[in-house]
Image (cartoon, rainbow, N blue to C red; front, side):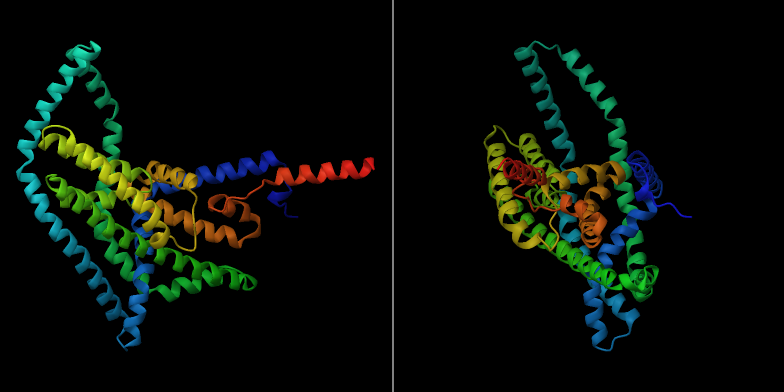
Length: 369
C-alpha cells in the first residue's frame, strides 16, 4: 500500500520539500565544475540549432553542418575579442601611470577625511586593512568564478558539438521518460523552452551591441581614456540584471577620476549612463529582449543573487534563462501553476482574500434579509 506525500500533514510535506531543496543545492554546488559548462552548452546549442538545421536543408551532412555553425560562432567571438585586445594592450601599458595617479588621489582622500571628519590616517588605514581582510573570501570566490569561466570556454565547443550531434537521442529520451498521455505537454514545454531561450539570447546579443555602441560613443565624446574598452565591458556587465548596470557605471567614473582633473567628466559619465540605462530599460529590453516568458523584477533580483551565491559569475548569467525554463514547466503542470504565476510579471488587480471577503459579506447581507 503506497502513501502519497500529498496525503501527509503539512509539516511532513514541508520537511520533505526542504530536504529535497537542500539536497539539490548541495549537489549543484559540489558538481558546479561539471554542471555550469553543460548549462552554457545547452543554451548555446539551442541557439545554434536553427543554423544547423538550415545547413542540413542544403544536403550538408550533419557533422559538417554542426562544425560550420560552430566555426561561424567562434569567428564572430574571436573578431570581437581581437578588437578589444588592442585596447587591453594599451591599457596594460598605461597601468603604472594609472597606479601612481590612483595612489595620489587616495592620499588626498585620506587627508580630506582627516580634516573633515577628524579620523586619523593611521585609523583609516587600519579600517581599510580590516575591510580588505574581510573581503578576501569574496575576492577568492570571484577569482575562482573567473577561472571557472575560462574552463568553460575550453569545454564549451566539445559539449555543444556533442549536444547538437545527439539532439535526437536526447529528445527521444525526454519523450520516453514520461508516459504517453503527457507527450503533448512535453512537446509544448520543449517547443516553448526552445523559443524562449533563442529569443532571450538573441535579444541579449542585440541589446549588448546597442548598449556597447552607446556606452563607447558617450565615453569617447566625454574624453574618457579607453572609452571603447570600458563601454564594451559595461555592456557585458549589463547582461547581469539590475546589478551589472551599477558596476558598469563605476568603471568609467573611476577611470575619469584617475585620468582627469576636476569632476565635470564624472558628472557627464553618470548623466550619460543614466540616459543609456533609461533607453535600455524602457525601449531595448521591452522590445528586443522580452520573450514569451516574462519574469518579474523581484524574482529576477533574487535569482541573480542566488545564482551568484551558487555558481558565482556564471550563476548570475544563467539565473534568468534557467528561471524562464522553470516557469514554462510550472505553467504546464497543474500543481505547480501557482509557482509559475509567482515567477511571472502579470500583477493581479485583486487578491483572492478580497474575493472571499466580498462573497462572505454578500452571504451575511442575504441571510439578514
